[in-house]
Amino acid sequence: MIKKRPKAPRGFTLVELMITTVIMVIVGLAIGVVIVDGQTGWNTMYNRLNSDVVTDGYVARKKFDAVMRSASRGQSLVASDGSWIEVYSYASPSSTVVDRYSRFYVSDGDLNLEYGQIEPRSTLSVDTVCGNVSTCTFQQVGMSTQMTLTLDNGTQTNTIVSSAVTHNQ
Image (cartoon, rainbow, N blue to C red; front, side, top):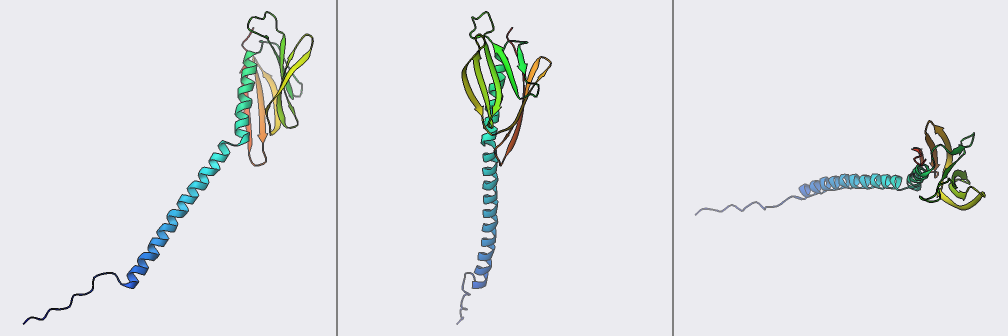
């Protein structure tokens, strides 16, 4: 008669399970650190791109370009220190004389745009274009007008340089 040997138990020993568990914990923590770091970086970039200084800069540049391009060519005033600019335009497409003005200036950290009538001189409206303005200068460069605007909200600074050429005669 042949004796059967008892089979060795199949499975893992306690030491093997503990080593596997430690390895899995280390891998899990590494993956978690990578995910958290990626999310933190994404949040930082999202906040930078959508901060008020970026959106305000975009709005200011678009408004400056629109006003300058609709202004009458060759008729503008720039302060000697570059702190404001005033351009002249037609009230409507059917106007035959330049009868309106638009003036960009900074007041209390805001870039303002004043619209008015030339004769008799009167202000029609004042719009706040953007806030967080730390510096803003205007200058004439040949046939174009340039605005250098620096916005600062305390955590982020953004400098915008915009140049536009007037188109209306």
